Image (cartoon, rainbow, N blue to C red; front, side):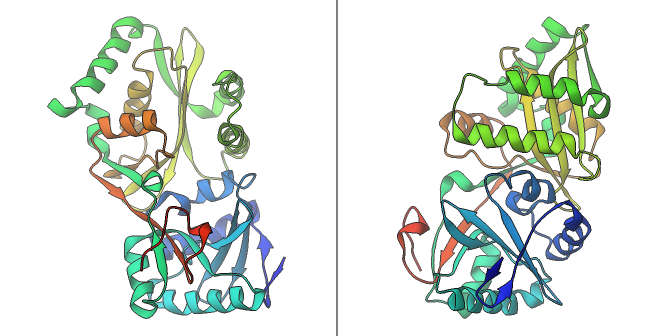
Length: 308
């Protein structure tokens, strides 16, 4: 795809080594800039790349609007990467829009471009937790989650097991077909497509996953990947929500076996859905990662209003 005066090519599995290299250089901990997430959502958010000597620019499309992800580069090259991207958008005759930017990156950009505008939709914030807390569910504030966990153990303690996902991909797909299959929400449709993609490409994505079986039937599965050296990103959690406590057990089992070198867990955003927000807040996040949408001009596509 020619955009401005540069050629951008579609992102695909062949780019995984490149993405891993530049994501590591950038050191972002925001969920949209996670290897698995970048690839799994391409049915809804197509991605195109431009490779320079010191950075990779990723173009996304959302509701017909082109936007730039945070440049994948070492911080010393960030300003130069933004300048090149701005020039590309100008030559294409399109307003320069940036999306899913963390506060520190936004602040660096605004030091050079104080005339830019930004908005920060609350529904986009990532929830970050202490890994150990999600494993042990210790403390008074997690009493309700611990009650759900104990309720599961009382009902299913002798009949469940947690297994690596590799031998149960087909059963996970069967569960996915049943999961909220009466809901025609567009987001859920694309989420299913993305989940199928991850299950089909599990090994090359270098993710880790496990599934929870009750009476030898998969009733839930979970997949995660490194968000940074200290943070695990939970990419997918699917379970039979008619079973009380299944999500608490699923997370505890997964995080006690995998990514034990990580101290933090990113469980992504709540998409503005109140039930998800309530559940994520009830798990007592350590902090939230604010995200910003940045534009050169105040436009309606900034969503939610802008401020300098």
